[in-house]
Image (cartoon, rainbow, N blue to C red; front, side):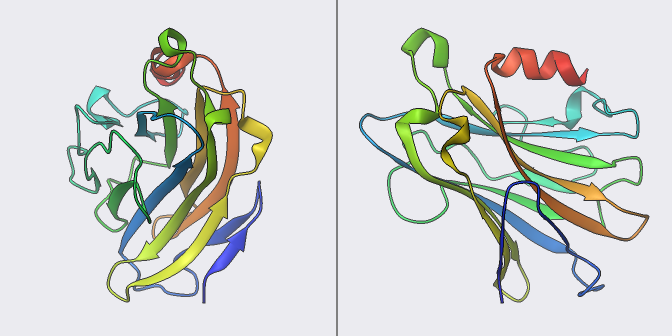
Length: 186
C-alpha cells in the first residue's frame, strides 16, 4: 500500500522492509501549454552537506555514481505521455557508506533564456517504487508553491544509520539555475 506524503513528510523505507535494496525514483509532470525540457539531477552528499566528488553529481551527462549505487535512466526532453517522465535507479545497499543524502532536483533546461518555470507544469510528482515487488512505496504530489521556480528539490533519500534509508518529501523551489546548485554543493 502506497503512502501519500505531504510537504516535509517522510517515510523510513527500510524499517518495515529490511530486505529492501533496489528502488526506483519516478519523476513525472504534465505540461500545461508548451513543451519544456526538464532534467532530473541527483547530488550525493557526505556528512558535511557537500558532494562526495564531482562524479557524485548525477545528471544527463553523468548517469551513474562511481559505486554504481545510483543510475539515471536518461533524459526525457518532452515530458509527453503518461507515467514517469524520468527514472533513477538506486541500490540502497550498494551506495557507499560515506553518502548520507541523495538530493533529487528537477530543473527547467535553459529556463532564463526561454522564460520558463514550474508554473507551466501541472501534476508534478515524485514516487518511490520497490523494484523487486513492483510496488509503489510512497508518492509526493508537488503543490503550486514552487510555480515561480526554475528548479525544485522534489525530495531526498537520507541515510538514518548504516543500514536504513528514509525518503523525505521537500518541494522547495529556487531560481539559482543548475550552476548555482552545483556551486552550493561543491
